[in-house]
Image (cartoon, rainbow, N blue to C red; front, top):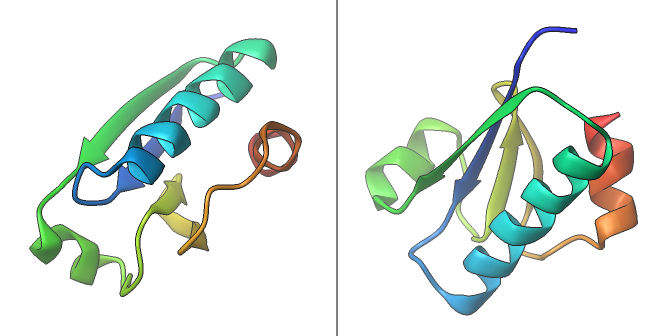
Length: 79
């Protein structure tokens, strides 16, 4: 499987950090080859059409916005 690209969009708030941590944990538990990036610039949010953060973008597609999914939800998204 190709390397997955995981983007976390948000201003750096506690929820954004939690989303990044959970996404990384989910990817590791699934044994994925991935790169995780954090985008904190609001202009980058608009690129993806995201209005409410935190948001998770997987391989260029917005998967969730405005909340932090559970670890199990993230595993399903990444699988």
